[in-house]
Amino acid sequence: MIEFEHRKYRVNNGDLRTYVEFYEYRPVSGPMPEQYKYKKLYSCWAKVDRVWLKDLEQAKSNGTMSDVTLTIRDPLLYYPTDKHFLKIHTREYQDYVYNVTSSQPDLQHRDFYTVVAKLKDEMQWG
Figure 1: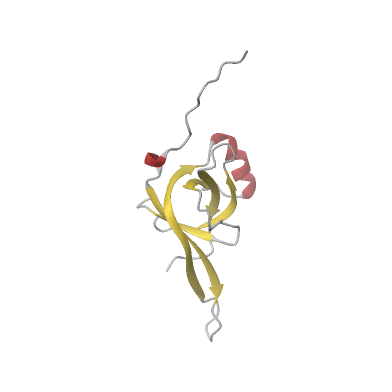
Figure 2: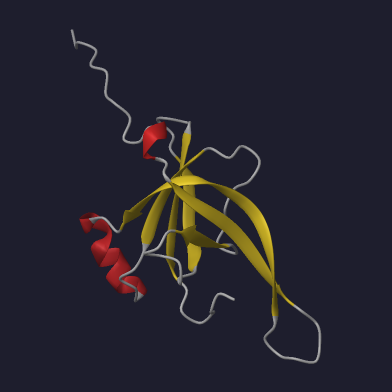
């Protein structure tokens, strides 16, 4: 008979220390081209990880080496899609905007949600 072994979660509430905000932008109709209106969709605390070594090859094939993996609490009412982007509020990431590339719930521990984002280079934050 196999003995039950309790495994700890990979993330707990104490690890969610970084404030992130999810946005979507829409072009503004007006005389100036390429003007955008930012709409804040959701904000929360997250654990921010760099690309894992196993994901490094996938990041190279995407053409970016600055992917981030976020782990957030399950938002229940908001789910990030690839049409959204995010801003990480720390000193190291303050000038960068990231596109959401994928997001999925953690099916073993339904309390958390994983979001993968890549650096968005064509849009400046302002």
